[in-house]
Amino acid sequence: MFKSALFWKVMTLLGCMVVLLIPLNMLSSLVNERSSYRDDVEQSLRQSASGPQTITGPLIAIPITELTTVMEDNKEIKKERRFIRYYLPENLNIVGKQTVEPRHIGIYEGQIWRTAITLDATFNRQLLSNEVGPDTLIGTPYVVLAVGDSRGIGKVGELDINGESYPIEPGSNLPGVGQGLHAILPVKRLQDEKLTLRFNLDLMGTKQLAVVPVGRNSQFNLTSNWPHPGFMGDFLPQQRTVTESGFSANWQSTWFANNLNTSFYDGQLIDVDRLPAFSVTVANPVDQYQLTDRAVKYAILLIGLTFMSFFLLETLTGLRVHPMQYLLVGLSLVMFYLVLLAVSEHIGFNGAWLLASLVCAGINGFYLKAVLNSGKASAMFTLGLLMLDAVLWQLLQSEDSALLLGTGVLFVALSAIMLLTRNIDWYGMRRKVQMPENGEIQKDPERFRLWK
Image (tube, rainbow, N blue to C red; front, side, top):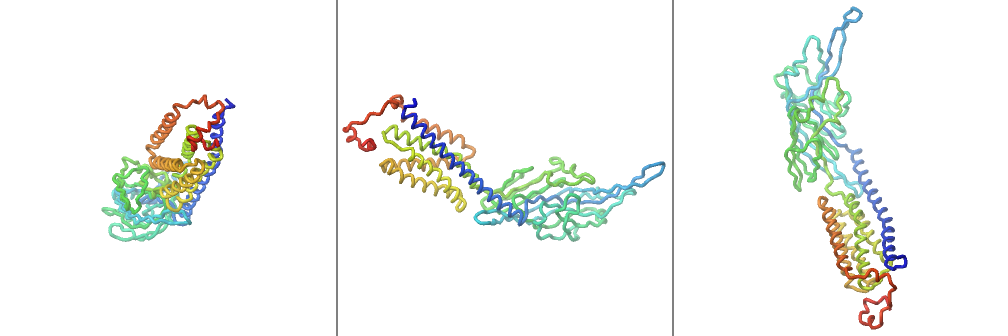
């Protein structure tokens, strides 16, 4: 077996493929490095502008002092218990109009969104008026709206309470929730027949916008000019429409579905990050780095099929291709992915794939014309490489059917190999190869050119 030319040929080809794994691994590391640069740009936008935003509220916070009398050492002692009691709205309606703006740092792009928000809330007056009692002292109530990053707060309108305007102050004024807005609520308002709040807010952020449905009945309507939203969150929108010019979505929820009324206890610190929320993400439609990384994983398939084609050509025609020629062709296929990565950062993934396919197939066609000494064979291999590139592109675009399509490609390749080699005497290839007669060379000089 070790004296067989076929054995050593196969081992040499396997060695070439192992060698090519080194630049492929380096290329994969380069893709991850460039991807991290892009992530750094998004992080820079968050640090310079504003991060993801979560809106919690509005809700009413009332400082309460409860007086109790206890007996200690046969004496009556007055004790006070101070805490903040939260009241959530019966009905909450939030309407937002979002505008997404691209920002560039070098060749990398990120997005910043700005949203004009209108909040309407109605509170249960009876619950609010029940606070007055002989053993209960009420502090100054205030209306609270918490946000994820206060740097994104832009223009803030005055708070409208039952038709009267009140100024809004910075800060949530709540323990544990520092970022947000608050407005003093006069105690007399707790005795009104109804209590309705309304105000406008301009909010800026990156990546995600979320709204906590604190109302017994909550509704959030959002329209945007961004055509690639991501709706993966605690609640999917009841209705949504996505077009090339943007999207619109509507969320609805109640306490029966989210149990948010149990998340606000007297004196409890509010952890807004753990509350369920309506959320939408400004998602990037095409991540060329992720697609390029997936493409690199298919590189060994492309190289293996190309090497197998050369091996079949050698076996069926008597031509001899040197291992160095195999290696050079393999390196040109690796170069395809490097060109793809470099160009995709400037013109997008699909355009870069087409350009890289044409360039690498062209250089291989030019090289193989000299190696095979046949323009026809070179053209066939060039066409075959372009077809393989087209199939791999389809694999990357069809995530749901990638396994099926990949299996089909391998099955067709294996069937072609079995069909073309069905009459080959593999044992006979182990014997010493006899020199062809001169008559055979003259009859078919193209086939035996290397014997001359």
